[in-house]
Length: 631
Image 1: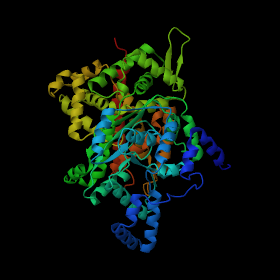
Image 2: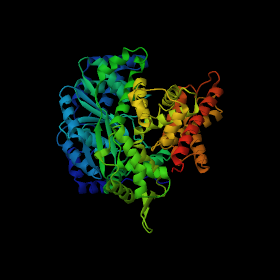
Image 3: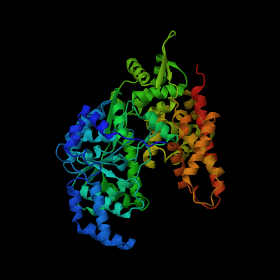
Image 4: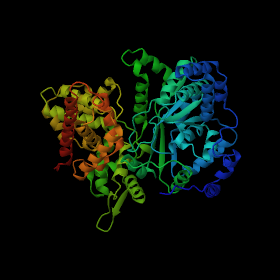
């Protein structure tokens, strides 16, 4: 296979059409593909003369058995590699180019939220961890910050996006390029920790992806702890620094790159981010794709939260993890439901073509539920409005996600050929809004099948499910979670709103049978089917006398998942995904079922498999109730 040849001159000539060439020439980006900034940034200059960093580097050199001078030279190189600033015309030039890059969407930001952040910006370093559904997020979030009168944020981004010639422009526009794999580079890790600490001491605003990479399923991924850990370390070394975590949700009505991401989730290789990739990505944004909604979640003071966790002996050692999970929970709370998500949910649930009236009838109970739980809807859209739903259906037809047929007596819509995973991506942007409801339904199934103490049985079941699904979804602390379950119970039985009371299996059966909205099979089945594949492969795993080979194991999961999908043993192909297998594997590791020779390993793996199968059986009971013919 011949190598890809990148014709830089022709692409650079093309850049002239969007006004980018002149901007790149101003910073010399077209002349030196890999040169660093010509002068050291304030943070780099401060750290190069910092006695404390020099002492730590000397200590590290001794522990590594290396020459301290050699380590200091290496550290200086890393610092200059990270260095970023806002200088000259570069920020304005990048802003102009980024408007072209993101022209497919209209950015919607709540002005009241930005007004509050402007006040906080005068006192704190604002840390903006954002959800990551698109490459555009790294453009959208800093634009929303600086465009609303808040001090511009430095963007911590992966070195994979260090692409000529834009890397020159971006380094002068506040983009800090970080290496993704640093396990074998202790000097780099020490320097990065010092660099982040210095930025917080200098009261810089920072933003980064809390997930560490784009979601391939539409749902928020498990958080990456690295950057957050460095920020917590920074506060330990900067006594006077004050920082606020400001969770950021970014959700799009539609995205051009979804098909590519869903293919990657099923094992396709990811294309490297080079110049031609960047140019093609920009060109793909020519077609308008609706709005992007950026919401700021409830901020919290990082130093105070750390102190609270460390004062608790049970969780102090897990402060980074707890703060990351709380941040993700707040991002989900801020993420609104889009009309695209509810329309895709309706059509995926039906698994057939629907008329407009049928789509509206399917969406109506969901709209009422969201209103009862006071969940945000993007753009304050009326999900029961006929014109709103029709407009969304037509937009999804234009993008190819849906197909329609109007040759009969009524126009009907269905998921387009090969588009089920794309539709599932959009549905999953709202799945966090329905997880509590789904868990509550399964709690009632357990109560329906259990003894007379229905409330206790349901509570025990919902806590079990919270533990089973905690690597896929972000739950609040147990007390708050219990409150969420009580709120769900009050919807199916308004009498519970005045205070939880005992109920019988017959009550649980009646509530489920009479419910206009059942979602457990729609929300949880894809994830539990993936858990089923992982649990099955663990039981069959024959290589426990060797170091656990995760790549080999996940490849086996993909192969079995494809087989089960063809046999209709899985509800949909959506479950055949590395993105869904990995959290299940993390859960198994947490339960000491992977890479262990502990007691009863085979028996405990079999118990895990039985637990997943039993949960799927209860999900099937909800599906039977949902799909039965109602009078």
